Amino acid sequence: VNAVNGVPSKGLLQVIDPTFKAYHVEGTSWDIYDPVANITAACNYAADKYGSMDNVNSAY
Image (tube, rainbow, N blue to C red; front, side):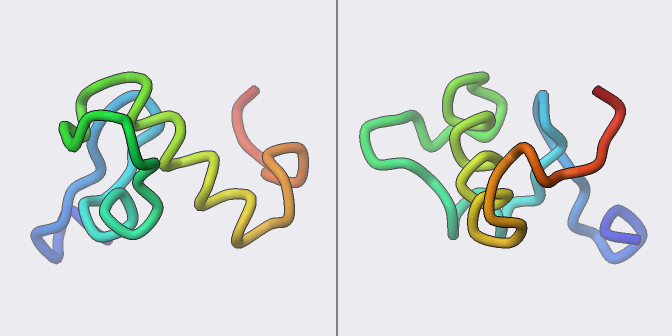
């Protein structure tokens, strides 16, 4: 749905640009394809939305 709307998911954990910008961790790169920046932003998002990465149902 996001890609159809022109906001494709990017990077290791498939984060969209608005989510990356909102949950970016200070001191990490602003490059969404940087693995550390992508993972930390995605983890911040998951913690905010689901309480913990452990509460996220996914492929792992």
